[in-house]
Image (cartoon, rainbow, N blue to C red; front, side, top):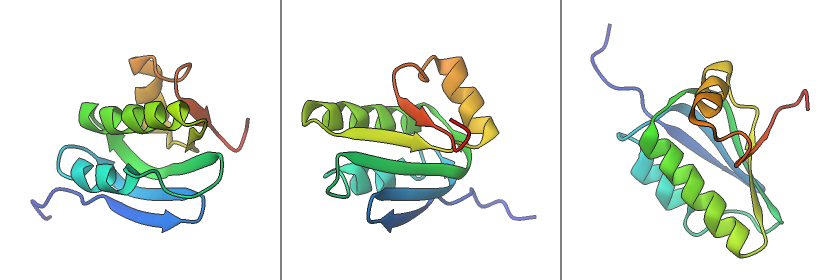
Length: 106
């Protein structure tokens, strides 16, 4: 078993980003650099969270800041298909009504 912390992998897509791993203090700087400037050119920036196992407060902050920047310029950041664990953390933090969280079931 490795003592290494999980690494956040970020895949740039035409409409946004696909994230894999944990969004925590170890990888948040890389995420922030991919979100500023906001990716894509459409009105929606899709952040695929289906393969994210965990998000901490630094990850929430990065996503909230991207959401706020997008809103100011008439765009929308969509948190797409968060894993059950991440969806639960969004719920606990009270962010579901604020952020645009979308699942394929919606």
